[in-house]
Image (cartoon, rainbow, N blue to C red):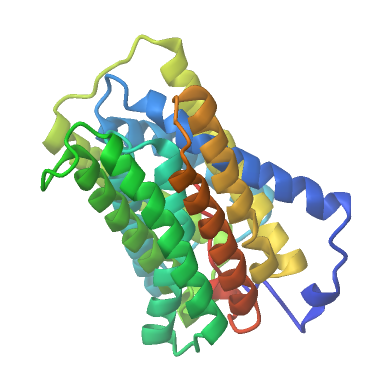
Length: 324
């Protein structure tokens, strides 16, 4: 499914309700999901929380595909692609992220995912032949420095700071693996097979396969499924599955069709800003001059990189928002 055709998105007006409302909704909702995840891993194995989320989201996403009148049946090559995307995106990515938030503040993990555009560009260069602009490299370098400041502060604030394999170090490693898994899924779905599939249908099948793997992984690593008694847990599952996954993905891809992938990618800035705000208010994240500078550099670098990337990237390999 092409997100852009004939360059018409370049002329689409931006300051209209049909653009502004979905833009604000997706950025704000995805920003909030990072904090909601922390309630899903409080006393419940992360692997089971991931499974519960997508066990609810999968049938809802198939329903969305039907309501949007997208074809559901996929060819054999498309099914193989859906399996690969599902394992990378809805298993590897989310399993790594949920486990990372056991050790690292949710807003910091969100900031790290703001750098998803970097491996996206490198993988797209390696496998799809996309060119990388100098401005993108410069902006990415600035963003990496900024995020490094935030990670250094997180490391210092942890009791295990300075110990190889300490809690924060393990959380950072898990988050980086999650970024790589998400990036692989993003780039792989942009191949010719993926471009011929309605995006919502591909995501529904990919989510189904990922959910099946999540179930097996949870059984092997965490034992029998727990039944949490807290209403807040199940409210969070509903929010993450329906609002954070099913509602936002169609809004996001409609934006891509309207204004182009490059401009839509700017909602990643809103996403990480909301995530850091919630970490500050609800998780007690403490700002220092180092973290303030780091946040400023990260956002500046992402803006510079996205501006350069926007001019060169085909829509199918856009910098996906760091959605959770």
